Image 1 (cartoon, rainbow, N blue to C red):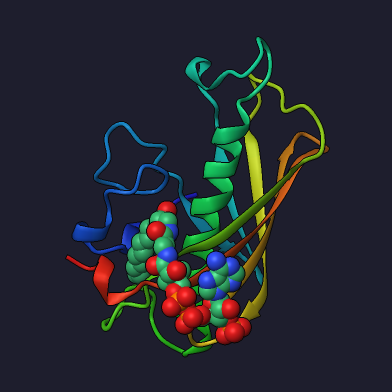
Image 2: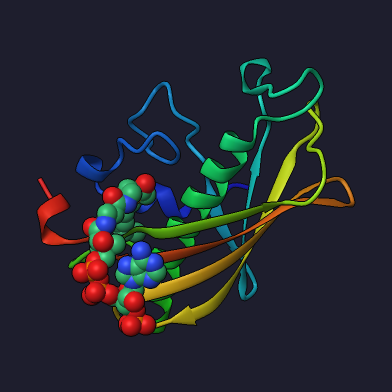
Length: 155
Ligand SMILES: CCCCCCCCCCCCCC(=O)SCCNC(=O)CCNC(=O)[C@H](O)C(C)(C)COP(=O)(O)OP(=O)(O)OC[C@H]1O[C@@H](n2cnc3c(N)ncnc32)[C@H](O)[C@@H]1OP(=O)(O)O
C-alpha cells in the first residue's frame, strides 16, 4: 500500500506509542488504512512474538487490536466531522476498554490481517470491532472502546 497510514498523520509528540508510534524504534509501528467503510492493517510477527513454539503471543494480538482500534477511531472521527485526516485541532483517541476473544491458535510465519468495523461513532467515544485473521482463519476478534484523549495526557 502506498498511501499514508492513519498513524502517519499523528503529530510527532504523540508518535511514541509502543503499538503504533512512528517514533518508537522498538515498537510495532502498525499501519492502518481505509478499505471502503472498514479499516485494515497487516502485521508479520517476529520470532520474539512467540507464545508456544509455532504460535503467536496473545499479548501481541491484543496490542495490534488496541492500536488498530485507536487509529481507526481517530480516522472515523475525522470522517464523521468531514475533516481531512490530521487537520488541526487533532481528534485524538485513547483506549478506554479493550476486549479480546482468542478464537483459534494464531500461527507464526503468516501475515496477520486486521479488519475493523466502526460500530459506533460519537463526538467523544468511538467503538471499533476488529478481527485478526491468518489466511482464511479468524484467530481473534476484539472490541476497542476509544475515548477522546483527556487534556491530562497531552504534553
Ligand atoms: C490523525 C491525527 C490524530 C492523532 C491521534 C493521536 C492519538 C494517539 C493515540 C496513541 C494510541 C494510544 C493507545 C493507548 O494505549 S492509550 C493508553 C491506555 N489508555 C489510557 O491510559 C486511558 C486512561 N483512562 C482515561 O484517561 C479515562 O478513563 C478515559 C479518557 C478513557 C475516559 O474518561 P472519562 O471516564 O472521563 O470519559 P467520560 O465519562 O466522558 O465517558 C465518555 C464515554 O466513554 C465511556 N467510557 C469511559 N470509560 C470507559 C471504559 N473504561 N469502558 C467503557 N466505556 C467507557 C463512557 O461510558 C462514555 O460513553 P457514553 O455514555 O457517551 O456512551
